[in-house]
Length: 376
Image (cartoon, rainbow, N blue to C red):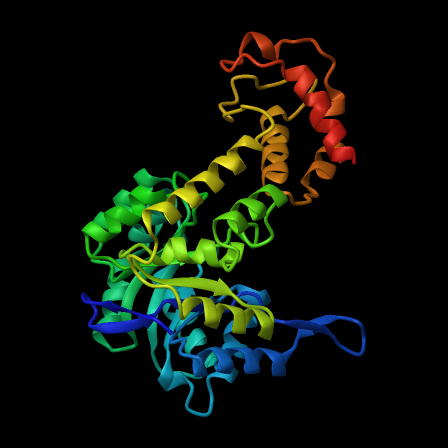
């Protein structure tokens, strides 16, 4: 296992961080989905035995059960082998009292008396304003002073401007960002990773495989990678690209099977800072362009075409069409639009949208194509 030395914190973190969100599930005797406790304990302990020393969970994962099972897996001396990260949920947070009550509940669930990395979960610019007003900075300072957390952190889902504000308004020890070779301009993006590096705030990466989409790739992307190096799977290309960045402390990978755990342990044993050659970086850049060429319609989501007189959700339809076709995945969200009579079949070709669209493509015609695509 390769490790990253985090100079600011004086610790070494494994390049592979175990994301604990995707617990293996099984059916109980009543046919209900329940956590497969034995498999989960086995997977966590195998990863730790293989060198993983960073575990990521959260209060809300697996319907609120995730922390309990992570705590169970960390018995028998495994807690002392890892840096444990969990998160303060914001959805119902309305006071400092809630923060303290929730934190103590998390300690109980995880069977520990301290948390290494404690994150404010899923921050946006607006949520940050609210949390500051509720006193979250003082809350984090207090937990650190009492030794109940070692590092104050946040996970992020918003644009770069919001990220820049948040990272500048508190002395963070770490930040967690969605980042992968397709999301270099999405959310905080590459600019966010570089800004964090400039401020010596280590980055933990989530969605490095974009929810698995960069693992199960379309045939033309797979063939492109195989031509460049048949020994690297699409997963390894994605992880190598991430590990190449010196700003990144660890890459979270959500493991649901022992086979995935073993695969990740092998891959991250080969990944290190600066591992990518210029030619390999170009291979990944070309893969990104292959994906972009799969975009079906040049809709930017500006919504100038809205509202549609017939009630068609034009930007939503085009966004789902582009996304599902680009990554070769199935999506059920279009059915909801059909049920609400907001799908492409409701278009009456009045062409009112065409007078307002700055991109100038034939919206009614593209809506017909989208509807045919989602019907198949």
